[in-house]
Image (cartoon, rainbow, N blue to C red):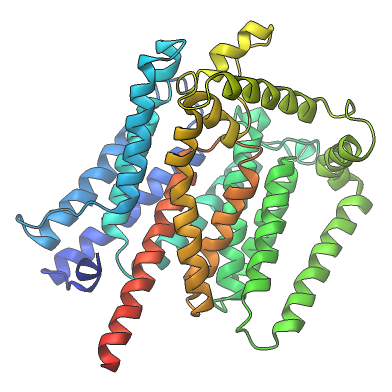
Length: 416
């Protein structure tokens, strides 16, 4: 990997043009993932077009850049997710429902290809920054799209985007990623204009009524502020961020439209945990699903009942077809302890490497450590193993780890 990171492109002008095309194709891909994906299965022709455009441009760039005899390298990320996909396919042998097992596999294989394309391209700090800017641009497009498609009278009625047919939780989580990236660019990189995008993104997350989206945004901002300990006037910065968080909470509870959008849902969540566990039906139902998943794991501890078969199994309890709403227990029920280890060891590997790089002063590691912590904490309430945007973020985190490691080796070699 380090040799690939240091390699100079073999063609200058052509490389610049191809890189521009790659950037455009990735932007279009992100729009297809987070903005224009609300179509019936098999009819998302826009996604299919940009999918093949993106992988075609990515691998063409690899071939032209590295020559015909050194085409690709097999990154650890691809090995990790490839093994998880392989285990998922094999689980169809013992699955309670073969048809249910294969439902998410097409998307997972697409994720495997897309993340490999991203890793093949993002091989230096400049391209990593381009990736972040494209992510922000796509999220900004999504926010404007949702606000334009939603009548102003319904902006504060809760669940922004519901009228467009999107899952508002998915929208909230997508925009929460933009909150962190834009805050990182402003607070850590010093691009103050990005604070405007942070505020706009946070406002949009609130309007989606996604509790997880709001909590992920606040959690990520605090993590970045706290661990950016090399900053000038560190304590003042942290206190200002904490004060801003307190102000945000105050505004949510004092401004009626914001309270209707998200404050009422936060109150219901707090009441559930502190008082009446029946007051929030959404959380109660999720706890019920987790209990079912625990019983499945007790009966099938090693390999589970087959990928995605929680949704099939839960019908025996008289519940409508659904998933566990918890990535840990969804994987545990479907693939057992073996599946949990196969999936989460890479998270742990990335987190440990990013944490060390944060201590060594690598700024990009700070952003991706915060994003990875988001996933580790909030996957207790979401299912992420087949979500394209989340895995593109994880792949970018792997790129950041490799880029920072290569920079450290170069510094060591220069010192010697």
